[in-house]
Length: 68
Image 1 (tube, one colour):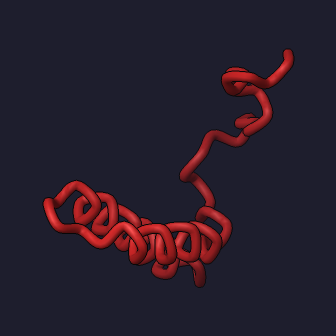
Image 2: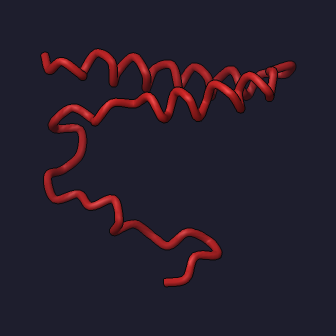
């Protein structure tokens, strides 16, 4: 297994669990706001094979309000 595969998988799992927590009544929005971006920023490079080799993240659709 690649060295970053376990870290990547664990961080994605934690982001998923945070998303589930955010949907619960009584979830702490300050906690979600603090932890979510931190977890996302800590994601290592995805392991090889997760995305196609010819994938270009800049080829996606324009965001609302962003000029083409």
